Image (cartoon, rainbow, N blue to C red; front, side, top):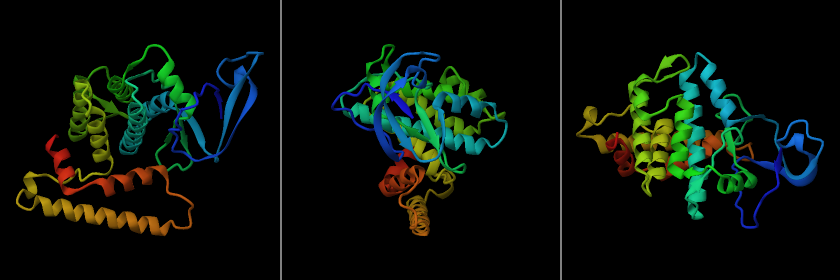
Length: 271
C-alpha cells in the first residue's frame, strides 16, 4: 500500500493495524494518486497481512446500498467512528485543534468478514490531515463523518433516518442525537463524551433501564460488568494460539476494564 511521503520527524504512527514491513520506493504517481501519470515520486510502502482494503468513503457508500443486516452495519459504522475519534484525540493531545478529514483517503482494512473494518491511519495520513486546507475543528470533523455515514444533513434528520432500508430504532437515534449534541457544543470534553456514547452503543448494557431496577440498579450494573469481563477473559483464553487480539476485541477489552458502575451510570444518565 503506497503512501506519498510527507512525514515530519516527530510524526506519530496512529495505525492500530499490524504492519508487516515498510519501506520507501520511487513509484509512478499513478500508483499513489494521479491516474495515468508517467512521472515518478518517492513514497512510503506498507506491507499488510492479506486483507480487503477500501476507503472510509467507499465503505459508507457501499453500506448504504445494502438492504439488510442493519445491526451489523450499524456496529461497523459505530466502530469506524470510534476509531476515527481515537485518532483525532491523539492529534488533539499533540495540540492540534483543526484537521482536514478526507474520507476518500482514509483507509479501512478487513481481514475477517465477521469482524468490523479497522481504520489504518498511517503517519502520512496524519500529516495530510493537519497540513491540508479546508480544515475543520476536531468536533466538526467527527460530526461531518457521522452525518456522512447516516446520510443526513443535521441532527434533526435523525427522526426520519434510515439505514439499509430500515428506520433507525428510537433508542439508537436517541444516542446519535446525544453524540451530535455534545459535538455541537465544541467543549474540551466533547470528543471524550462522543467516544463514551459510541462505546456504550457497541458494548454497553443498552437493555438495562433505570426505571426497571431503580432499587437495585448498582448491583444490576455490577453483575452485568462482572459477567461481560468473565466472557471476555474466556474468549481471550480460547484464542491463546493467536499472536494478538483483533483490534475490535482490544477496544472492547479496554472499555470493559475502564468501565465502572459509576461511569456506566453517568453515561446512562445523559441519555
